[in-house]
Image (cartoon, rainbow, N blue to C red):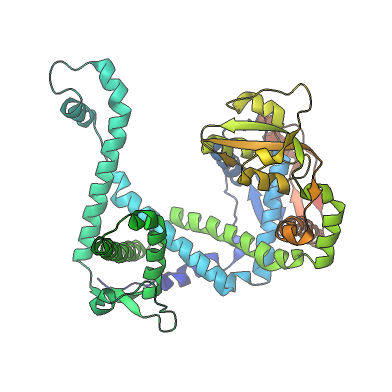
Length: 482
């Protein structure tokens, strides 16, 4: 099979995305909501964003319920994103080597995802007969089949058969790729490989797949991670020969996995999904997200690095937040599944009231009639660290606590002796850097808005706001001074 590098696709991608003004065009059949320096934000784009919010934040209600969507705020967010993308292009962040690597990695990953869908997922077909046959064979070998019993087992059987078919199709596809490919392995290097040895200087090639190299350092990285996961199991083996046998197996498994991924990646790129408009739309959106990240990383973050003077000032002004053995007053939500906790956290970030939301989604919720102060020494280390980070009124991230997941709202702190500055310096840097980052980003966006010509169609926006019952909107327009 002919070697096909991912870089062969770069010209096509660059051709499609060379003019960033063409990246965000309105359909002929959808209303234009806003214009940002000549680029259009249309109703379809806003609807796509709303659909995404509902997909990942199902608790959000467009009728003004808990965490209801504010259409104008959402549009303003999209305008800010468009300004960041435009600025990223203006300063040529899209030509930065780090950005190009990330974009090519996204193309590879998305291509592999598409290939897996075509060759595996779309070919899985589990019929009612398959389910019934499995049930009879494994659950009801003799006697009549009870429909009630079959229905109870049906979902579990479907999942099991799906996993089996997926593995079978995947294995067969990989076997076909291997059969048609040219794979070379440096057996001498593989046999003499020492995972403790440093090969960084020479970085030899351990294998080639259709001419494309697999560096030894890639294999060593994966092997060391695997060793860490299995370290306890290996330490229990007293027989050195058995340990060596398992290490050799792991060595071969690691290399096989790298070769397999390389084969799949090559086949995915060979199919050139970039010719598909739907695929290109996915890549376009991913490119824009990467440009926003690049803008924040390369332009805003350097403005947010805190000085020693700023850290000291924050420490002195917030000394109560850095006390050890202190007491806290708080509210919490508890969940059995992390997924449910993550959904609730996203809802809170959308503006939901903590206590109100807790009554609807928390597994256990007991409103406190009076302030109950709890010493932080009673909490696990992970929760103590989060409480140290929080200021009064703030809400935690999702916290693991045994088999439960929690979200905590800090309502008060008191007591305890202050930690020394040197012991909390790392936490201070994170807190102050985040504050400076938010301020720097806000100021930069304000500057871009002042220099840009931004128009919002009042009538179109009002019509959409009425549709989602989010209240009336006012027209916003900024005229360029250029």
